[in-house]
Image (cartoon, rainbow, N blue to C red; front, top):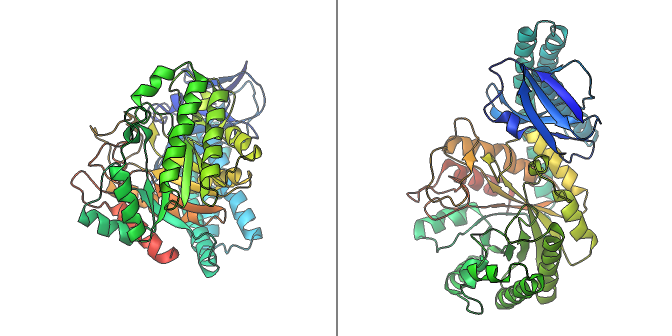
Length: 490
């Protein structure tokens, strides 16, 4: 068993950070690890002795809790300074982005270069004072703050320049920005705000709510939502048709647990029925979602792949002119570090793309800042790099996003996930949207962004992740999305 060793100031490791730390290799896929704190050191044990990059949440001044990445580290007897190696990794990533984007023709401002120079000066101090761990740690923290300041500015400048270029050459199909309408109809005030902010809408079509008993279907809400979208000429994104969450699957399906042929027949029948009803109105079908992370029923990974493939096949046969997506939860694959599975999210997606089933794109579901079942908070350049990594599959990408606006208890949240965001508020949600949504839309392979939860006033997956609060009042994040739509989308 291989071991990476780190030392760090006793009060610098955020609560729970050791439990969320993981290591990736050159393929960016997390490996199984055991992370412990012993004798003032952080010990990361793995089954391999190859070099790897450590990913771990860290507090950065002015940026809060964010998951940082070290440079590639080899095993050695003496421990690494954790703050210094995180500073080295983040600064290297920043400089690599500057080099790549400059070569691609992106204008890099003088202010970005100045901030990088400041970060490099702090890092030189950190590396040269490692015989005094406390001094080196303070210099490393200064490096990280300056590095993320520069990274945020670089990402913003890149996004604005790339989005201006995309706007000059309209895409086909047009970029979409939308939100899921939820399980009930919109009131008049919410409708007005929605139409000002979005050019697309998600219709959930949850199996549990549509086929309440086997063979008996309830269409009232979905029919009215579809009609509302058509009346306002919105792009309709429907689904996911197949989601193996216990609260989205019909209760009667548990009678088929252990009968895979029976389950696949039920899935095919439901999808055929839904697509036949709405195929003339739906532009984008999400055929399956969260099938890479679900543990509902006693299904193996291979059976989940087969079910997802069947969902795509049925949708393609019924609606050949629509776009067909499969959504992948937790696309960084953090969960791989603590459980044994055969397929990473990317490998799962690659298997479906290579099978040529009629899949026209992928959706990456990022529920940022939630534990468990969510995605660790990242800096903008890490998100940019990971999106580029997924783009290697050669199909268009859509994003499904959620970010919390509060940290207190949320009784309407179905998933009892803990919020992992410092100073969480409506303003922090809006700031995240302002930083990350334009960056995603700037990518030429990204066709759209869909906000996963619209309202906190009805049952929802993740705490405080909506764009309207419990009093049905719009949050600041909705205004940011409206500004993005007005500036960059038709």
